[in-house]
Length: 160
Image (cartoon, rainbow, N blue to C red; front, side, top):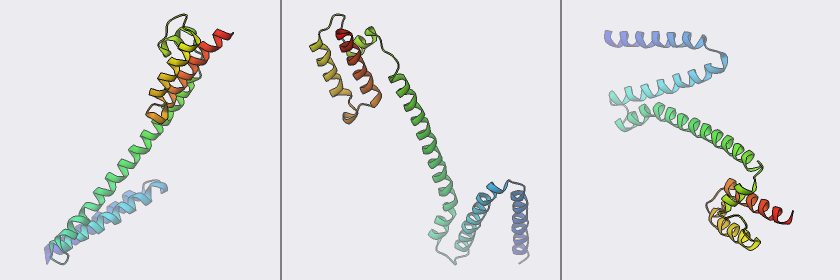
């Protein structure tokens, strides 16, 4: 009986210290701390009830694991959001590079042609590369735009 009272007193003191700790945090962060406290207390109660035989042990295990699963899920979601931000930033940098001017040598290199290529060779090389690197066939927008830009540079030069 005394051990239970000491344990209860220890838990109450821990809760008191936790609440004092949370009150020092900015108001925006307090809700997350209180949610963590509620979920943690619920999990602890389930584990305690399963240890005393009042709840099946599987419920205690599942309840005890919930706070950890929640943390892992949140961590995974934040990582996905961060990687999506980085991908969109990289995509915007690629689109800026795609609009950069291309000279004749770069255009020839892009299409895999040599100096003096005919109009038919330019169109044929463009068609073959677009069949390989078109976004609808597993390529990406950046490569497709570079291939199109190279064709335009070479054909415009021939007419201009």
